[in-house]
Every structure is written in structure tokens, then in C-alpha cells.
Image (tube, rainbow, N blue to C red; front, side):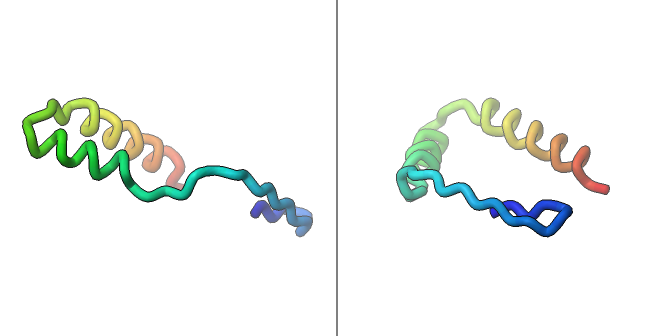
Length: 56
């Protein structure tokens, strides 16, 4: 739901599959079995940089 500065509201419904965290669980198993964690760390660092820039 989006509330615009003028007070109007817009809502868009997007059909999609429920997030059951299947990918996250599978990735965790891969990491436990020795997968390279570098891509995960890089993705996390990128998200943190974005969050820092968005902070007022």
C-alpha cells in the first residue's frame, strides 16, 4: 500500500508464491557443508551500504 503526500492511497496486489524460506534453508545446508560464504557476505555488505545511504 502506498500513501502519497497528498493523502491518496494506492494499492497493488501481486500474485506470487508464499515465502516459505526454502531457498534460505537450502543455502544454510550448503554453507554447513562447506560452500563459499563470500557471495552471501558481499550481498549483506551491499544491503548495509544501501541502508546507510537511506538513513536520514
